[in-house]
Image (cartoon, rainbow, N blue to C red; front, side, top):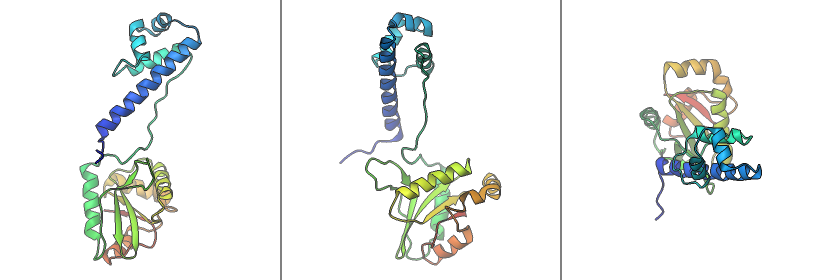
Length: 218
C-alpha cells in the first residue's frame, strides 16, 4: 500500500529539487562564462569550497542569499514562487466552519472528507463534497478572506478542472474582517457564486443540493 507523504516530507523533496536545479544552473552558467569557481565565489563573498558544494548539491540547506549573490555575479537573478500543489493543512477555524456546515445538512445529504481532484498527479482537493440523491456539490472553507479576486480565480480554475460537478459552495467564517471584505467585494464572487447564504441554507436543510454555486457565511 503506498504511503501518503505529509507536508514535511513533500517540503523536503521540494527543497532538494530546488537546490539541485540551482546548483546545476550556477555551475553551467559559470563554466559557460569561463569563470573559475574561485573568482565567482570571491565576487559573491563566499568561499570557493562552499560554492563547490552548492554546485555539487552537497549542501543540505544552502543560504538563499548565497545562491542569489552568486547568480548576480553570473549575470542572473534567482526567482522563487509558490504554486498550488494540494490542500493546505487546515486550522481549527476551518474545521469549525466545516462542522457548522455539516450541521445544516438535511436528510439524505452526506459530507465526505477531503476529496482530491480526479486528475493524475494533481494534488489539489476540495475541503468537502456534499453528496445527495440529486447530485453533488464541492465545498471549500475560508477562515479569512485575503485577496477576493485571487480567491475567486483560484476556485474558478479548480471548478473548471473537476468535471464531476458545477456546483460549488464557498463557506466563509463569520468574522468582522470577512464581513467587511464581503460588503466591499461580494460582487467579485457573483459570477462564480451567484447564490447567497439564505438560499443555500434552505436547500441544504431540505436535503437538496443547491441548484447553483454560492457563498454562505457560518
